[in-house]
Structure formats: structure tokens, C-alpha cells
Image 1 (cartoon, one colour):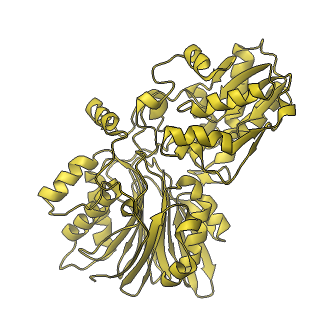
Image 2 (cartoon, rainbow, N blue to C red):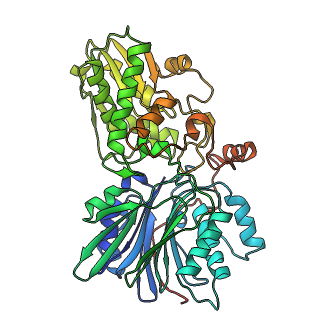
Image 3 (cartoon, rainbow, N blue to C red):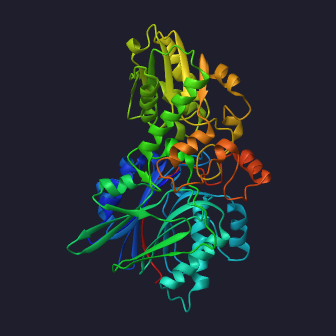
Length: 504
């Protein structure tokens, strides 16, 4: 899970890209980067940390040009912060390419070997995004005639990427001397949307992970990039697209709706907020039918992503909705912190209980999901310390039992509280008096109800069914064994400023 953006405008884009990254900050807090282009020269600045910490006025001044891409990074394997793996990535052959990627490639290791032995390309990091960049570069070279690039060549190259690359990927890339390329994997697992803005100087285009970036930057939402589709925006203005995959299946990641995306985003025709309201509706029905004996005095959300579900649940049950926790908004999202110790410590720093909302009450706490259980356990303890008589816990999503291999930081089953426990055991482990999980069919129906054209979803972390069909037991075992082992590039790194002359 990362945030990506690409803009082709009629005026300098450095501030647009910076402001857009701020809006997408929830998608990645590990590192950030911006690349722009002016003529045949790329300009880039990237480094570890939050967007506001990576960029200073002097950096922004150097990011000149009317088109560019940006990225905020979330390490899918919990790797240490280092500048080398911050994005965008750059390669100067055959045409000069910059690329930013959201997702995770499931065949990155075989591709690395192919790159080295067959394509004669070298990787500088352990990042699968660099692998993807080099696959695209190689396919562009193979598709071009006399190193000339045009739309036909680019679409042919993306088709080659789809044939070779497996997994989840939403991509924005800059092709020197030509324009902005954006494309999405054939299953549409990770989101990618397009916006446009009509100005007196001409049409401007923006591609981003979520529609909230389009809204806040003053663009108008156009549509989603379709699974397998490539969108090409020439710096001189024309916008063209083509389906480049031989076979597609629209199956977006369910966890985007549960937790990852902002509630004010629209993804694949689904209002994230509306889908979470529906989750609360279905969860209320389950509680009414399976646990009618629960004497609930108040429904309390775990801020912030569970609030729509909790409010609807309380309304359906006819129980008072109360805000029982105050959130420190200057602490990062605990789910995406790269270590268990960091998560435990940050829960108490992030949330504080309002004692009068708990004292002497039976409370139902509602969260969007239970992943490792660390946060849930600490929050239940906080509720008891604040004086709650009984603490019930509800999850708006089903138990997370399996590794996610498509770009979310839950690859090790040993870290998942539900992987080898039943509901009763999980209830004891987190210390609640009752535990209610959403059913998987109900979760699917909640999103389907908002957009009935969506009939397939990637729900692999709940049911172990990997939508791309290429995830083997050996691959999952390799992910498990690699978890927590530092890579050769995981060293302390500083920020990087590059001004690169392309090889047009």
C-alpha cells in the first residue's frame, strides 16, 4: 500500500504534487519522493519520513517543470527506512524513465534473475518497484524501432509487462520527451483514478491512488483506470488509452474499503464511506441474531476508520453512540508501523480514553479489523482501566487469517492473531467479554450494495484465495522466512536530490 500520483499540467506541478502527497499520506509514512521534468531533464528529490519532513523550500525550487510524478512509501515487508528504496526510481535506458508503483509483485525474484541473465539489467535495491521499472524499460526497448517511441510502442510495452509480471501493481511513469504513462494490473487489485482540469491554457490531467487527491487539488473526477488498461498523456495534451491485457477480471482489494482508503474517496465506483456504513448495517444484523442477550450501554468506535460502521451499527441496534477515545493526530497509523514494539508503544500515545463514557457501562467497541491483535488488546485494557464493567469487541471485517501478498504489511501468519486461533481463543487473547466478527459474505455484500457491478474482490487475507492464481505454498513459505530479515540495502540513508539528463 503506497500513494502514487502523476500530473500533466500547464503550469509548474511541484506544489500540486506536494499537496497531493499530503492528502495521500495515510497510504504510506515511511518515505516520499517527487520527480518532475523540464525539457529533456528530470529533477527528483526523495527521502525517508513524512512528506512534510522530506521536502523543504530549497527542494521544491529545484523541482521545475509542468509534469511529474510522486510517491509516498509504505514498506510491505517492514523494511528499515532508507533513501535507496524511496521512490520514484529512475533508469536512463532506453529512453529515460521514472516510475512509482503501488502494490507488490509475486514473481519479483524470478524476474530479477531474468533481468540479470537475459535482459542484462542490474538491480540496485531489493525493491520490486525497481524490478517493475526495468521490465518496462526492457519491453519498451524490445517494442521500439530505432529507439523511437510512440503510443503504439508504449502500449505494446505495457502488454509485455502484463505478460511477464504477476501480482498487484498500479503504476505512474514518466517517459522522457513524451509524457505520462499510467497502468493497472489485469485484476485491478490496487486503485488508480483519473481527474482532469480545464484551464485557459489547455486541459490538465491527474492520476492518483484515490479520488480524494483529485477533489482537493481542484480537478474533476473522470473515471477509474480499468484493470489491464494503460493511459498515456502526451505533454502536448492528447489523452489516449488502451486495454493492454489479454485477460482481465475486476477484483479490487477488499481491505481498501475496510481500512486503507480515506472515507471521502471513491474507488471503482464505490464510496468508501458508504461501504463502511453498510458494513455497520450487516454487523448489526449479525449481533441481533447471534448475540441478542448482550446488554450494551454504548457503542464506541476506535477512531477513525471504524466510525461510519460503528455509528450505523448503533443506529440499527437502537443503542447510544458515544465517542470514548480521543486521538492524537500527530501519531502515525499503528497498522503500518514497521515493528510490533512500535505499535504497542504508539497505541497509548495515539489514543486516550474519556473515562466518563466507560465508567460503570457495558461497552461495545467497534474497529475496522483485527490484524495482529496488539492494538485491540491495549484498547480493551484502556477501557477496563477507565471503569467499564464489560467490554465487547466487534470487527467490521472477518478474521484476518492469511498472508497478504499484494502490498499490505501482513505477510507473516505468525503475526496474525486469527491465523491459528478460533473466535473464542481470540476473544480470550485480546481480553474481551465477547467478540463479533463480520461474515465474509456480508462484507462482500456491503461493497456490492454500493456498486452492484462489482462481483469479484481480492479477499485473500480473509479466505486464503489468491485472485491472481499464481501464489504457491513455496512462495508463501519464502515470504514467511524472509519476514524480519534485513536486506542488503537496509541501511541508514539520507535524502536524495537528482537532476538527470535523459537519453532521448
